[in-house]
Length: 106
Image (cartoon, rainbow, N blue to C red; front, top):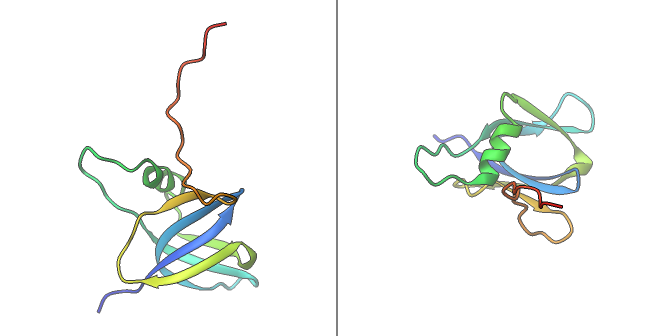
């Protein structure tokens, strides 16, 4: 039998993070929800999703996230993994880190 897969949406620094995890439950810390076994796509090809890479780098080495209940927007049990995302909390549009450009000469 397959382990359940959860899509967790939560607020973090004015952004809405959407992550996928295998385990979600009430934590031993009162008022916190534990999100563990984060799931990220593994791309060996040339095409790489910058948002997925940013999330993978940000949560590298994280065993369990302890999220305050007030920050969690939604927890869904899903059949298959979609795209992880970081969205602007106000507009809901995806936030992609722009490619760094050289400074304009003065």
